[in-house]
Amino acid sequence: MDLVIQLTILVLAAFVGIEVISKIPNTLHTPLMSGTNAIHGIVVLGGLLVIGHAEGVLSKTILVIAIIFGTINVVGGFLVTDRMLGMFKRKPAVAEKAEGGS
Amino acid sequence: MTTLATAFYQERDFINALYLVAIILFIVGLRGLTGPHTAVQGNKIAAVGMLIAVVATLIGEGVIPDGETALLIAVGVIVGTAVGIPSALQVKMTAMPQMVALFNGVGGGAVALIAWAEYRHALHLGVDLEEKVLIPTLFAAIIGSISFWGSNIAFAKLQEILSGKPIKLPGQQLINVLLLLVAVGSAAAIASVDSELLFVLGILVAAGILGNMVVLPIGGADMPVVISLLNAFTGLSAAAAGIALDNNALIVAGIIVGASGTILTNLMAVAMNRSVPSIIAGGFGGGDAAAAGGGDG
Image (cartoon, rainbow over all chains, first blue to last red; front, side):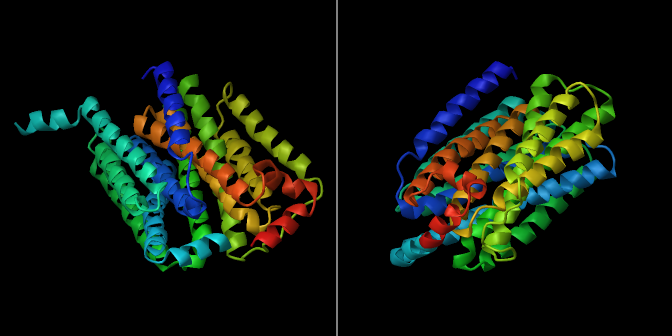
């Protein structure tokens, strides 16, 4: 795709990212960090896209590790966020305490 | 009939349409995460978006050219899931920040490794990568490597594998500047000279040491802010990888995390009555970072 179109998408998406989280309560800082952390696990797509044309054992090993890393990022990220929020939902007082201590 | 159906599903437009659905779900999910009543739902919506993005990628034409690739992908996904699920479920609530640091670190590591593999591929083919691909690849390698090693140090400090107190070397500021110059200089050199050794040592290793050196001087109480900053870094590196690989989902999801992560880092610092520059520079300037941080924890 044209670089200029990609940069347009990039800049507009950056504004979306800024707008989406302009106002959030302090208690949600850590879950939001964890949630965005899970979303950048999308890098796993890069590993999936490149491994098909990789040559040689070293390249393939590098990419399998990359896919393992990316999958850990996605799976672990969403699960940890869910656990944080689950606690937050049931016992807000405990969640606030945990937030303060983090 | 089957061939026709397959051809349709492998259409690039179809895959990009699925990416669009995934991106919408990410934004809606992220929006949900900003409110206490919608947060649980928001996280799940974003997870569905991720599943769609992964499936859309796998059905792409030529993504799985042979059985060996299918096997390698299966091994990667299964091992990653087998490691990710138990670590996320077993971690204690009090240990959450360092777990996020670890998950963030592997994400940054994945970006750096993908950039390395992509560079090896170009060397193997004997073609020069065009600037549009080479520059974001090198950027992704540098930022990804910083994020991986920085996050590991953040994890080690919060987990008390390393001391939570600031760890400093004499002349650290100068060393950091030199390391950054080595990484950027190597990137500039690679634009004209093909060298895998230069890529690995000059970029991945130098940026990795820089990641260590930047986080080591930071006190334990300031660490959540640093993790958030590294989180934004990984998002940025993912967006760069997206430009190199010509992939919309990576560009948009990466930059959304990069942008929102930067704002979030600032909000977290303000909530702690600190500023981001003072936290990062805290290690250079003396003991005040530790003192201020200690009272907060």
